[in-house]
Image 1 (cartoon, rainbow, N blue to C red):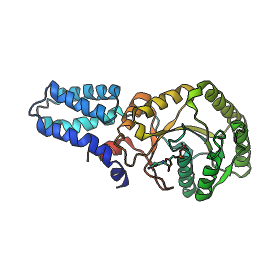
Image 2: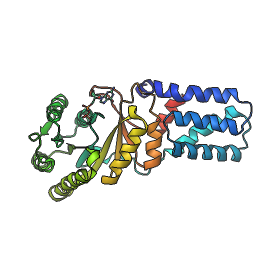
Image 3: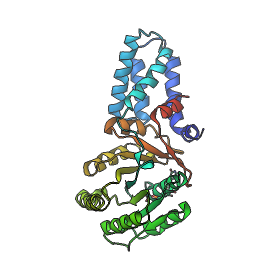
Image 4: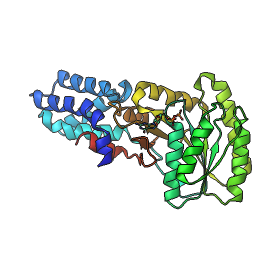
Length: 298
Ligand code: GDP
């Protein structure tokens, strides 16, 4: 129920328009497809993904010899689901000993997401340690400490301006000595200096490789759904400096731009693993593309 409730605006943005097309057209022609295309692009699905969805829809209409516009709706739903297909959607860090790096630019909800994730993993009976490795921002560590407290997990931090890799080093040592299952690293995301960012991530990865070689590795990028196409662009830029294994799309509650999930999975072939649907510790949900599309067209 919550997924659907959280998506109200995205749904209104896309589906009300789509429905009026399906009922307003009496035959399937170029105008029909163009209007669907326009709505999907306005719904933040992205130009590239939308064009491929429309091509797929046309092929399905032809193959199934469909004549009625209304009969296209299910085919459109299927086309969007196919467009969102990605290879690896597993949540291995929920099962195995893992180190999870969390990356994202300021303000997207990175700290909040680390806190929510810590709470979620803790509830699953996992022993969690948080590394506050985003040492660039003065308040970041304090804010994260509050979340760690709320989640009931340990946090290892450093002074403002400390070397993030040294924080990771300390946190790995702590995680190992305490027999933790998951080390969550809140890392930086200063995209405007990609060379530094890359170097910083490389340094952290080297330490984890050396000190915690048997840990499963996950790199999550946090993106703010309300920024629409900008979120897609950030994901692409982070993809240039890190091996991203999953996306967290925050602020899905109340945005009309939730369609960006389609663009992200389609263009990057990386799964959206979680969505943020509010500001409290419970407001992080696993994302399932089929469920998402079904909810949109409900
Ligand atoms: P950071 O700078 O990336 O670490 O961002 P924060 O975690 O401090 O979050 C920035 C703001 O976004 C805060 O006011 C959070 O409460 C809010 N926020 C984070 N995630 C969500 C979400 O999923 N939904 C909503 N509505 N707000 C969120």
